[in-house]
Length: 137
Image 1 (cartoon, rainbow, N blue to C red):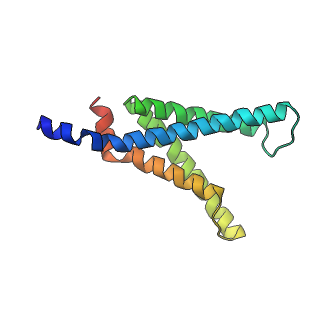
Image 2: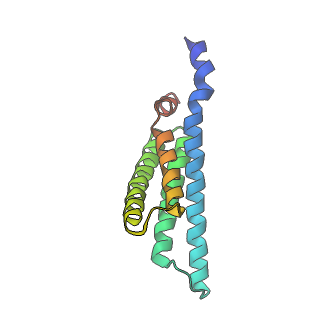
Image 3: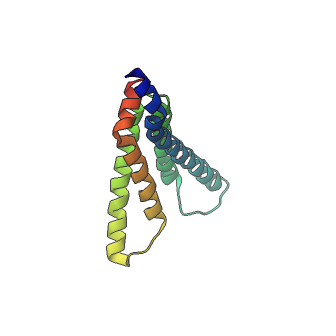
């Protein structure tokens, strides 16, 4: 029985590792966008984002990064954080995509890719082996 669990362990860990690293990618990207926006605004460059948007993007980046790092450290709370933020962002983005598509026509855009990335993180975080992997730490 133990040999069977040991043989299957790397395969079970893959979903959590992929979800964790995608969360790290999204978190770091959010922080980079927030810092770049704040720097560009501070030097007087006119861009579409403002300090409020930079704060929201940076805050989401921190939450994604926190959840991902905790998940990669096999903490169950990291999985819950990543599930919560990816689920909320998937739902919000889906609403925006549907409303924009209904009003302006359906076309593939940045929000569609963001929705896809969040759905992938959500699915990989919710898969049963991820839960077993984090519990068996």
